[in-house]
Image (tube, rainbow, N blue to C red; front, side, top):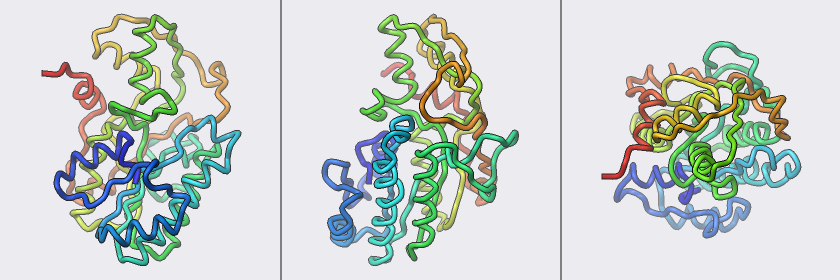
Length: 278
């Protein structure tokens, strides 16, 4: 599910010739359980990756039903379909299930306390998947970026920053929210590695390192060779409808203890994204 998004496309690249079906939102709606169950049954898939999500964080505050329909109820419908066919469900969640009061990387067993509707809907999806009776692998990640991000948002954060710079728009970016930017192709490779390692349960997976959104914006412009100033502002100054965690860096130690390779530092991944085409 979610094959047209940045993570979905990266999963297709990571699994050449191994994908039986790759529906996007237009072809298969998570909110239609009967059609979903039939699609999973018909595919005969042994592993189902759910890369679909309602991730309009601010819009979710005024439309919680839409967020919960996809991120919670939709996740449950898909989990039940996987349970009925015996498929492994690989479900992707978010660092926004945490409240940002931590000061060190957050392990999987930390009690979630989401600040907004989006995080609450993703946490509900986690709980419903875990209680569905399906065999599952649940992976929380953070700040996913790649080419071709959400159309509703105008692309990934990096794409939006570069587009605004090209248009000569002033750039004001929050500096008091720290997370681990994660490159979709690296995350996709890690998901596949977890499946092949027969991992089950909950894992945190991000690229190495952490930064603020402001630092990511500055690094993206520098990497792209753009000398454009970026004003550093606080979350309070931005005044977004949804509250975000001030600190949501995830501890990936459980993933590493499986003997799987760490994801490269986020700056190296950013360089790979913005490297000139050859």
